[in-house]
Image 1: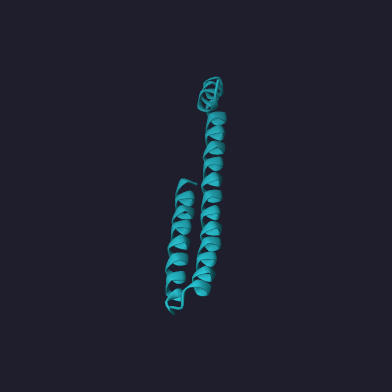
Image 2: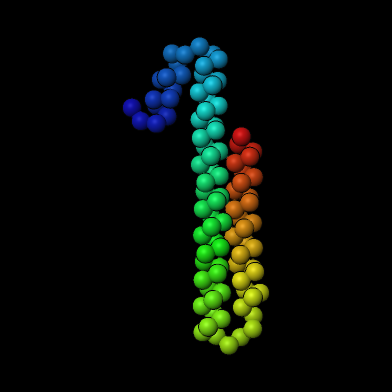
Amino acid sequence: MHGWDRILVTMQGQPEGERVDILLDVVEYVALAIELLAVTVIAVTMVVAFAIYFWNRWTKPENAHYQSFRARLGSGLLLGLEILVAADVIR
């Protein structure tokens, strides 16, 4: 048995209150996984945005690097925060 099958078989043999507890535990783990995804998205976005910013600063003479950096970083942060909101809704 894998994953959900094991959970469903376990839940079928349990009283109502214990089934609810198992379901709440599953929801909590799903929300935690989504939060970890959000933190990963934010961290990777920051690293990539800074790397591209410094690379562009050293290789291109233009002055628009900061605006590009802000846009890239802002969009990644927004995505991460939206994922965190989804985790809160699930909880």
